[in-house]
Image 1 (cartoon, rainbow, N blue to C red):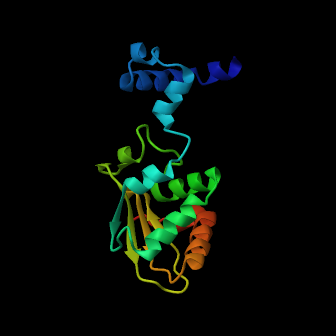
Image 2 (cartoon, rainbow, N blue to C red):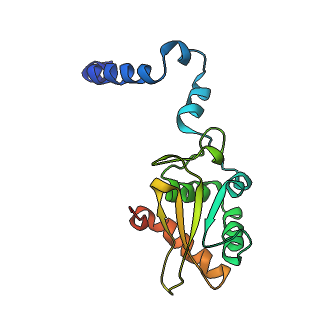
Length: 162
């Protein structure tokens, strides 16, 4: 009670702003779980939906690097999938409605994998504002998996802010 009194002004400002975006009468239609989904997105990542809603730049769906990438992704556990999604989009959750509803800096923006030339120590890079993964043309699946895992464990230090 003391804490809420101490930050009462901030709570009121937040509530006013929240209700400007989503009117109070609409909020009451949802329970806490539905509201969480609307605000945060889906907790589970459907890899098949992700594949279906991906564009390629410099690669085709049939390119070996793309096949290896999706094979590696399909083997990931839920936590690692969320880390990958965070790495490439800036969010660890899928928007309501699936990957077709991914939003970037300029509105709806499909996830895109863009080709980079291979250099022995080059890691995958991401541009989160554009839902873009810059993926080097690795010579085999094992190297791709190793470099992708390294990039994910290094976190935001490898995110390209261009």
